[in-house]
Image 1 (spheres, rainbow, N blue to C red):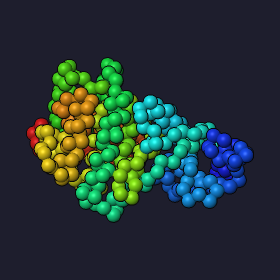
Image 2 (cartoon, rainbow, N blue to C red; image 1 turned 45 degrees about the vertical axis):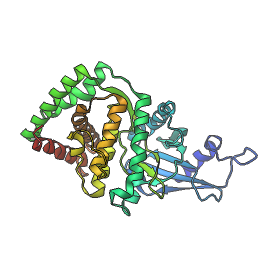
Image 3 (tube, rainbow, N blue to C red; image 1 turned 90 degrees about the horizontal axis):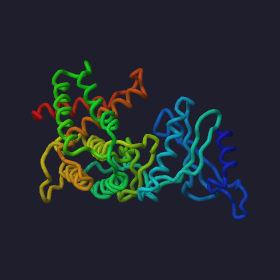
Image 4 (cartoon, rainbow, N blue to C red; image 1 turned 30 degrees about the horizontal axis):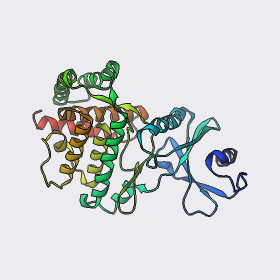
Length: 334
């Protein structure tokens, strides 16, 4: 597809900022396909203009036409984010279309490199406090800016139905299903007196999609193809859980079920707990929702995982995290 992509770039040079000073399409640009692009279902290219050492455009395209909707959803998500004060820290959509019957989209480059890259060098939480101190408040800002009352059908779809369905899942143990029954009852009680709002979510804010600079300061969040309305705090919980795993298989459950954080606690679980409680306070969410939201987050990701790989050819990481979380709750007799 290299020739088709190059033709598409030249055709859209004005929208992509690839014109010369005379306003004509420039021939002085080049692009490179990133191996894998981080996902099997899509390709990712970086585009450089002239002899600039930094890329100016990111190109994403579906490897199979069946995945066209996933490429097409990201421009809509980025458009929705425009009103939430995120300029500069998320990509800006530039152009969309199709090439060889595959959806293709271009967006601006967000500075920084994936947090997952730095994790290979700094696996101590103290080295990552900059990212921890900046990213959760930024996520809270998006959640607060987008927060609205959830509709009855949304609450049913996001909370009640997933918990009810999972509590009957034969692949879970009897103890795990019992925990889900308890969480379903708790969700019912909380919904009556303190219903959850709907917020705009990323749905995959793991370390590969969180960008930082060389000092591990947060610079941006990319890959919004899964963006949409959903449960508050679930994105932050997912990020903290994934980061805890990468730092050394740190279990986030104590941060979810423990009480309010104590002063001067600096270990990872305490920092995570502080972040979760601060977001709850900012959004007006009752902290007793946290164990329920955590279960729903892993159920959601396990469902997406199964949908993307129905044959089960890849390891079901989200499913494994769900088992671990439910077993942890059972041990705490919640």
